Amino acid sequence: MTSAYRLSGYRALVLHIGVYKTGSSHLQALFLANRAALAARSIHFPPYRDPGMAQRRGGNHSMAVLRMGTNGLWPGLSETLDLASPHATLLLSAEDFARPDRLAHVLDRLPVEAPGLDSRFIAYLRRYDHLLESAYAQAVKHREHGPLEPDAQGVRFHQDLPRIRDRLGHRALILRPYTARHWPGGQIGQDFTTALGWTGLWAQMTEGREARQNVGLSRVHTHLLSRLTAVADKQALLAYFSDHPPPGAETQTSRFFLSPATRRQLNRDCLKQDAAMFRDLGIDDPVDFLDLESFPDADSWTPFRPDTPALDRYLQQFFDRHQAPTAAARPAAEGTDVENVKLLAAKSPGAWQKIFNKFKLGRKKT
Image 1 (tube, rainbow, N blue to C red):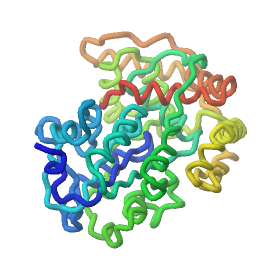
Image 2: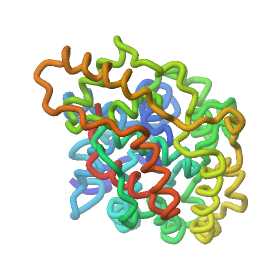
Image 3: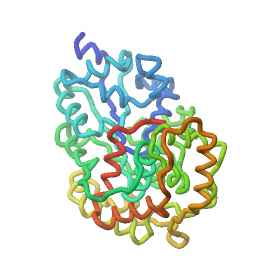
Image 4: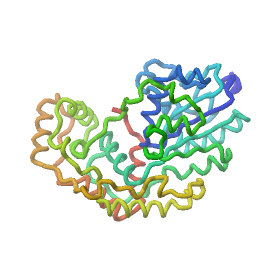
């Protein structure tokens, strides 16, 4: 079976490549729930061939991307996804497209396997301090525990984006900010369809607009998860949260890890490092694009200081009910994750990426 057959009828390809922690799960669920509306516009959002994989992964095509072989792009994708369709446009969505090795493979193979195909990559970029917090919370949720050491050089997760324009032309890359004030109607789904020129499609995408794919974690939730060492215990605690809210989870007002002043400096330092990249990407005003100077909580911000005795009692109650715990909670240290993230930002403006890089490599869904 040739690549031309696998792409039968497709005139355009849209690859939503994330990047990480920019609402990708929400968009993927939207695409999956509205496949009929997409099909009516001759857009195919492919399901997984394996029903079990379809149930586990939903609209996230990352497993297909990770299974791509070195022999070809479409043969590898078509083994996992049902690409057969009479429609004109193929829509794929996977944060793992943004991984440097996978992105390089796609850029190498597209001109060879699908010459003349109108290919566009769309990515969302998020401000540094918000990404730091979200990536850390997700890392704690899935795998990280104990102090974070600011001693490793991170990999710039978006450093290869200019290569898309270099290889496929200016039109091939669409960059959007992960900032609600820049989105039409404040909806990322509407922003996505508008950015691609799919006029009127958002009005037909009525399913799943309000669904949240990743449950938000408060500072209290994150702190409790950071005190467990085993993924199985973390998963059990996440389930326990729903029926047993931890003390302070609803009233804790310290939303961010870092003070407004520290966060502002972090954003400025990281932006300075990325200045050349933003010029290459054609973003003239990255401060506005990423909303770097907005700190609406500056006047009310207070550092997070957990009520350790109360949370110790909560964890003990959890372990009393949690059958056969695989590991005990590590000794409590007041503000451990807060202080380590402060240290990470203060000692190396670019080292926050270590957290992000750890999360995107080997993460597990819960």
